[in-house]
Picture 1 (tube, helix red, strand yellow):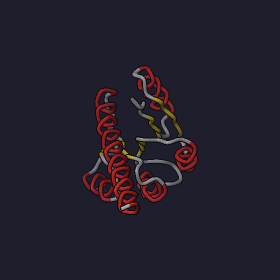
Picture 2 (cartoon, helix red, strand yellow; picture 1 turned 90 degrees about the vertical axis):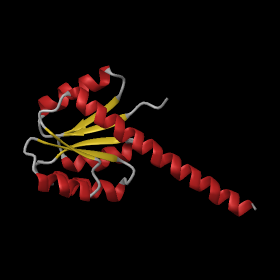
Picture 3 (tube, rainbow, N blue to C red; picture 1 turned 30 degrees about the horizontal axis):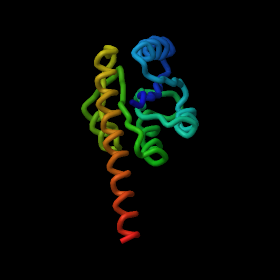
Length: 142
């Protein structure tokens, strides 16, 4: 079974360190960055399944990063994370393609559960794409 690959994006180094260690202990592959601009490099270098993205980032906002992720890596599932939750912020994030919106502090158990759900959705999308590709090939040979 494929291991889930996550990218944690947050300007809180303590959060990144603790969360990375906790998720790696549970067998997942975890990358981290505190810079929004590095997200796209990491997405290109690795086949990241799930991005956990802080809403409040220096430079680009989390929502701006989310929009760019969905353009460049549409299958990447994004979970927004914030310490300053709002209904408008959640609605905006979901509108632009986030799969979920969590408010800090979030337990590792809750974050992991949401990440597993996102990973499962990603796997379903990949399977649908493979099924369509097979049908197209079958049509070409019939």
